[in-house]
Image (tube, rainbow, N blue to C red; front, side, top):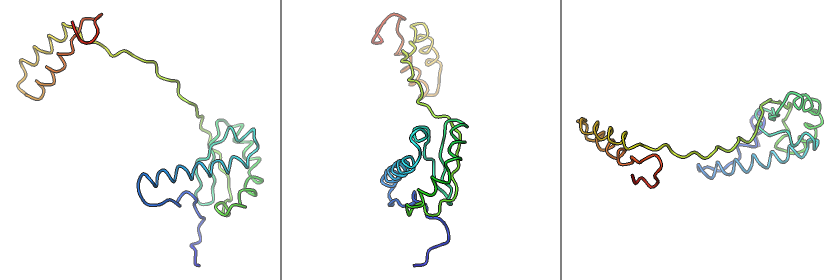
Length: 156
């Protein structure tokens, strides 16, 4: 079997089909991440994320420079253990990318702004002077949403 002289990329072993390919890649990425993180010391595994593997370079995302330094310190032992898996036999380097990750705060619920009766009448007036029929329909539809500030259900 004649194989090209380049490292095997485990993320390219997905079937053809857009959604299926994406799902298989995501599952494969998750399994590779769990494999890699299981080889790291437990205090570092919770602070690292698998970003990718290309041309023998394993890229991990870390939240700060301290963790990046610790990862570089453990690089040799990590690569030794990972090379036992055939997908990472050609791995020669661990690259640490510092990028803080966090779950964004949930957005507060906002009430949509209301359209006052006065503004609804202005929209109707503008619609009356508009020659473009499509724009006129849109303006009239918007003006139908006019309410008084304290009312609900669009009834004025």
